Each structure stands twice: as structure tokens, then as C-alpha cells.
Amino acid sequence: MDIELLYWRGCPSYPEAQQLVEDVLDDPEELRLREVKTQDEAEELRFPGSPTIRIDGVDIDPAGAEARPALNCRIYRLPDGRISPVPSREMVEAALR
Image 1 (cartoon, rainbow, N blue to C red):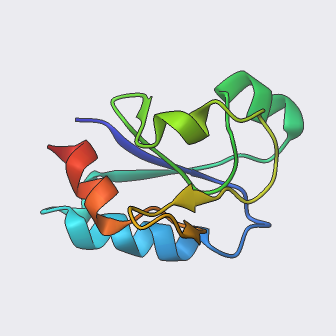
Image 2: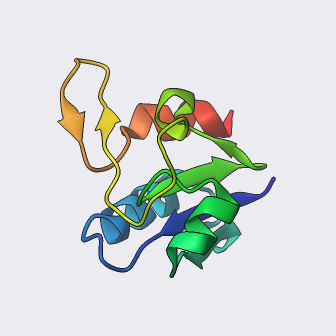
């Protein structure tokens, strides 16, 4: 399983997302970090914002994955409808199953 966290350093929420994924994984070493540095790279990677978590190349939030590629912070919708800068633990766990 390829588990990747794509991030933009200008977004303050990616460390929280990294910790969340590492907490869910049996082996935190499985997580690969990939910094997105330029708009061209964001477009090439179809990067909808930071943090983006992909399992085997598939975004854990398909709806959010459709956003225009950009160097910005991403938002996630939690199960109760609230907006969050990181996905819910349940979303990460479901994606890993």
C-alpha cells in the first residue's frame, strides 16, 4: 500500500494531518511525505491543496480532490458537516481499509 501525504509548506495544518495518519497506521514509516513547491508541480500532481492524503494514488476525499490544483490550504467536511483543515480520523481509517 502506497500512503502519501502531499503538502505545501505554507499551510499550517499539514503537521496535524501527518500526525493523524501516523497515529492510524500500524507502522508510521509507511507514510511518504511529498512537498509541493510550485504551481506547476501542483497542476502536474493534481494537488487540490494541503494537506492531501492519497492511498495507492487515490485521494481519501474524492469530492475535495476535484478542486482546482493550487498552492493553498485544503478544507475537509467532517461527518457532522463542519469544515476542518484536516480529514477526520474515520475518513483516514476508512481509506486504509
